[in-house]
Length: 155
Image (tube, rainbow, N blue to C red; front, side, top):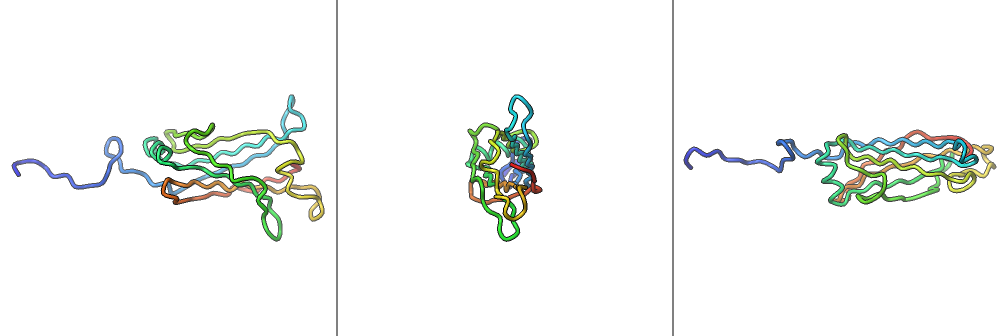
């Protein structure tokens, strides 16, 4: 074979780093009354992070990965789905590949008493208990999910 070296191995990313599998996901939810000029409205903000390098983050998004959000009302017997699934793919506003991984930041305003008003006041007064379940699904359908703490208030 004359002095040449043989190479046997898997596919490598930039600078010879191995591809990273998505194994962790974090999510946060905040729901708060909007300050003027939007009095009476409710600000909703969700931040989801799937840590990995930029190369792999772009690879996942280019190959069909998505983030799904489902909002639930927490109740003593069963948690009811109140909004979702909302699906974010490569072209969605707020979904990006960064040096820290895949990141979704989505924000909007709700009218009080609409979609996030999960309790009618019969069981526990007028307090609503809302949480989001964030799922990262890769192009092969493998999923990981996160559920941050419940946010309580009058929504």
